[in-house]
Length: 374
Ligand SMILES: Cc1cc2nc3c(=O)[nH]c(=O)nc-3n(C[C@H](O)[C@H](O)[C@H](O)COP(=O)(O)O)c2cc1C
Ligand SMILES: CC(C)CC(=O)C(=O)O
Image (cartoon, rainbow, N blue to C red; front, side, top):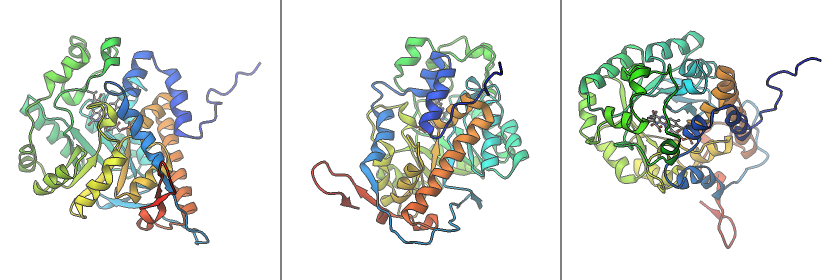
């Protein structure tokens, strides 16, 4: 009898991908990837908050030849999405970040490289650029060892990264019951080349202690002028949720902010990023780039985020699910699903280019009453 093809299951959506990938992962890895902090309130709300909004299509509009592209780092990307920096991708697939980089390049989107990557920034950028045009950004934590931090910055710059994404929401790790219950540690053989940590070093400590020993809890906005003084790369702040911090990022001359709660993995019960976005975008008044991540799982989520003021969205877990499902091809499938879904959403709402997406296409669901226009 013929054996069925290995990937016979039809993956049509990111939830299909999540379901299928989660079955293939060891329990502690699945929990590490999928869970968040404390009561998981923000993890859940990041996705469910999108449901407050309804799409208001304009009909009988010619949507042949629509254009989903946006411009970022002086280049066009295929649609307003890129892959967030997320650590320890080799647990999902041995090729980890190399596979992600290739898939992003093939699909014409950009990628964030985590400080906790399992391949070096040089290997990751090379893997993508061999496939096609792609820009990378280097994610950075404020570290206790400043020399090591400078080495990461120099290496990222030499490898062609366009920006530093300074993660600002993590002076310490969030309260993650799953990691503590499971005694989470990356499996043997997995290293952090950017942090100059061998697998042996990593396995001497709990994940939480390992993080605290590398990262400083005495960070401040003074990081920004310090970074400016040592690099020409753009400086973005990742983890902003308030208009006040958008204003401060502008004062400090940052190039962009990512409206992010770290996928609900840091402080639980922060607002869903889609709920934090409108006030942040309003405060920005076009003076700084506003991007968003957290809970984005469909093309209409991307559409709603753009309508509410984001220039581009980023996804973390969907990439990890893609990797676990089928390595590079799985990440490509994830991006293909979101791209096609976003394109259909634009066509069905009557938007021919990304610049036409606005609150005119959104309504807000009210508990007792008609849909409110924004
Ligand atoms: C397993 C995992 C590891 C992550 N590692 C990092 C990291 O090293 N640095 C960082 O700034 N954010 C990290 N993040 C957060 C992502 O960059 C991003 O903010 C988040 O995943 C977006 O939410 P989503 O997963 O719902 O798309 C990580 C997220 C996950 C799920
Ligand atoms: C590998 C981790 C320390 C990265 C992180 O920021 C996270 O788990 O959310």
